[in-house]
Image (cartoon, rainbow, N blue to C red; front, side, top):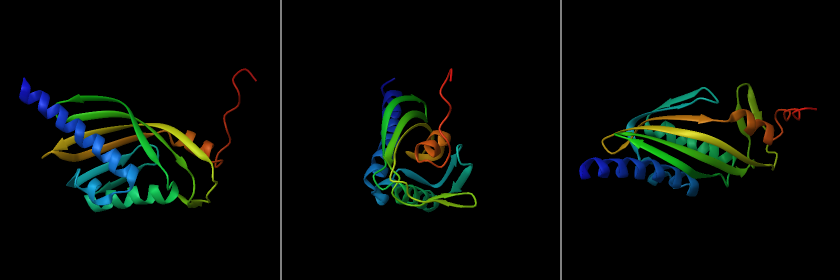
Length: 153
């Protein structure tokens, strides 16, 4: 039982460390949480990258678009070598945001967007990451899409 609990804590610690390293832009620290053959899928954008270097580059690109971006882990569930975290992402759209067919110019607007990160661990590092991000809300908040109509209007 104690060994199983230690594994849960370790898997949770790796997932949390990944978010915290992203928050401060410490790319070597972030890379240390990743299995060399990590596979990352981002549901909201349909992006998929393979390999630690490719994932770090993707995170760096998010930081270029939202230089002060920070994730706050709101909840965590851990089972064996799987971790699910609800994350609140906040930041300011201060750089170009790549989108299919071009980019969205910096708006200077703040975002506050929920997402969930689902990790599968191997050898004490993240081997798979599935990020379910509310991209529709993000795009509305930066002014790239119209805001939804008020309910009952």
